[in-house]
Image (spheres, rainbow, N blue to C red):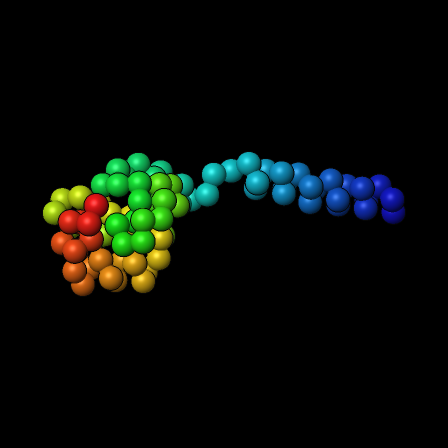
Length: 87
């Protein structure tokens, strides 16, 4: 009985270790989005640092702008020239 419990737990532990070492299926998508070059390291609306942490992006005049939130992104989209001129 003890041997069967030990084998059972060993099998479960092995399965967990193997599953934790595999890359997620979406890793190719994450790598592509991580390589996007932003027009600035700061959110153009609130000036918060968004390098590597941007919640959302938008394309304007062939440049990618990163935003800390949907609120800042929506403000930018309403009047992008206001925020670009301020920088």
